[in-house]
Length: 297
Image 1 (cartoon, rainbow, N blue to C red):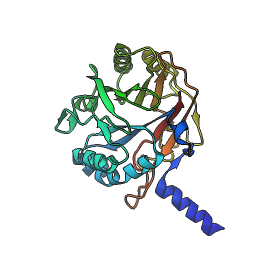
Image 2: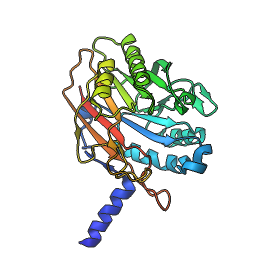
Image 3: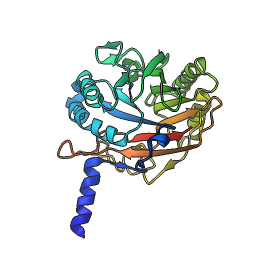
């Protein structure tokens, strides 16, 4: 019995854990479901490796298999700043996700549009508009953070998807400015009967009622409860790429919904922890966990 339990534990460590594993569905049901993953993958430039030891190339070779196994329709990555790691991701994801967006306008180690945000999709993508946030602070300014809005030609019907990575830290005024600009981008292109989603690392704690409520109102968005045992996307008590701080556990990564007159039949959100040993001390493949939304329209 102990041997079987050990094998099960090893399987979880190698493959990763999702709080609500995907359920096999018929093609007819899947065609009505829209599924979106957001995942901050911490692919900072390799030049930073000497002091943060995050080894982006090692992890870039392992992450695609986990993402493909989860099988969402669209994946939105943040912190994809290393060019070689980006090429590895694109090559390994190509068979399952032939459409991608966000590689354009690359300049040195940062991106002019929606810095570090990459999207991969099973279905055709069309870029609508991208913006760079007008206010920022510190290293975030070098990353050209912003929002990228695309249209996805999904079998359930076309929808719009905004991908973003917002200011880490900074003042309340900077955060509110970025919330407003992302919301304005969504509203510039809203259409009756065309749902919109906003996915990314918003660097806003769900436990902060003031900023979180301000964010949701600015986007005109809906959120929802997280199912399963994993309840945080940034969890210093579990993630081995973070300093152990049992009280530092937050939700800061979201997939929001803006219906524009379309009410979902069902929706569930859950957190995925992707793991595979990549050195002697680490198995978590990023310092964030992924957030997944599966919605039937």
